[in-house]
Length: 238
Image (tube, rainbow, N blue to C red; front, side, top):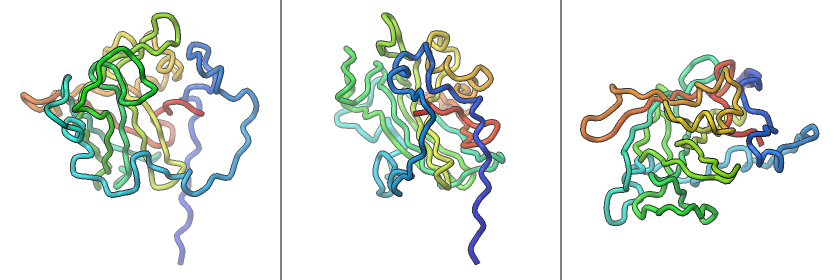
């Protein structure tokens, strides 16, 4: 006997940024101005991880070691951990989390990024892991730097980390950004400010001395809710 299809809570769109947000200038070029037309997607488009289908490696979660060539990556080490929850507040085990970020100088390992800042030969800025039975995840990484992004003459992105999550079904897919507490650039960032005020705090990690490891790295807690009234806001609805 087949199992009934899961009941999916409707998205709370009032917690997410609009397609068109004047302060975030590139949305005027890519945001839709007419009603969306649903398209039937191929299976691969529904659940395609960025970093491949092979098993998660032993060092995939540790960005301080997964790209070492001749030494330690430069920058402030940090621990990022949290719990992935569904719309009912239940932990989501065995879900894939992919992470990407700039290095400590605010530069990505990508040919499009031509920011005049050094690349770190020992830091890739990408990783992934699976949540455990309680929906918990953990990354070791380097705190990313701010960088200019051309939205206006003196626009700088706050320190942030990108996260992509695959839940137990396509409706649970979430791509978001995590920010750091007390960052003065948050007040000037249209991507963060474009998120409705009631939901912005869901994008900011909590510093935790309990998670901090003595002599090694500062700890941050960032729980992620895939759906429902308290869901973590999307990075950008495209």
